[in-house]
Image 1 (cartoon, one colour):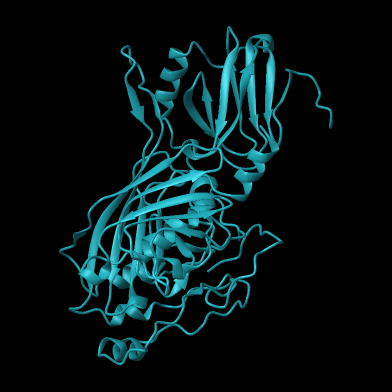
Image 2: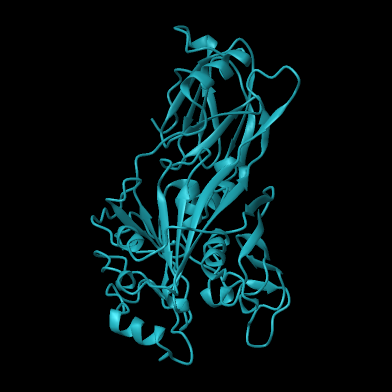
Length: 424
């Protein structure tokens, strides 16, 4: 695996995906963090958050005592518990709640047992809920992992709020949470990590007015990570749904800096993400539908979190194939469980330190966890390919012969089974 890909995979994210909000201690951090403009303070500027909006201040805003300009969002604290969201006590007739889905189109693979060459798509699906209050800073977003081979359990949630940068990762039982620093959403979904990552000022291609307002439904943003093309529904000024929170979530996939780039955006209906050297990944967003159970009673359970689990993640899952499907796939490929004789086996070990998707004979087989080893019996040479979540970034590929071991790392290493490694 080339060093460039390994470095890009470690420092970026890997999925497929779509798009969030609250506090924790990070397991690993970049030493070289970018300088963040005044309008978007650095997450390291203070471990103490700015005061959260109170019930009185939100009520005053709802009654018309609004500032001329909404304050810029600030990062959630990296340390300590997240305070109670005071928005819960103010919801009333002006609030609304909308449901939508985000489908991330994965690559096509042969269907299991197919004799006709038919294919299946490895799609990922996010469930979305958008809560619109009486002012922009009271908007909230919740995304839920639904269908597809995610690296975290289905039902895991990602919460966001308009007055904060970053996201909150919530366990499926909603009893535990941790913060995800701004800019690390792609790493979270594709690598199951939430490191503090450097971000970049985007180059904005599309029609915008001098004050930065969106004047087109089609825009493209570019950073050294790649480019993100967004197509949105009509602008909020026309009575349509505001798309700022979903836009901000999608910008994290190219680690774009500047939440103000999404102010005034219409609700996203389609996006295309392209990493350097990778295939395009499409996001399709359904038309939002209004919920029938909106009301203040929903918010305390959604935005008051009971237990901080700093530095932790929901239990990892491989997610790609069930054990029965994996066995059937291996049978179709003419592969079996390991033999006693090493000369008939192939062994593949993930030494990269992050999960990778392993394909044999172009059939996605399994996500290999860091240091996980796959040992199989093969009567012939086996072609392999390693990639990030659903192929957003392609890694090394080649062939491995019976009696050989492959170590995935900065560069793939092939050697005879049983032979001591050089470093040993």
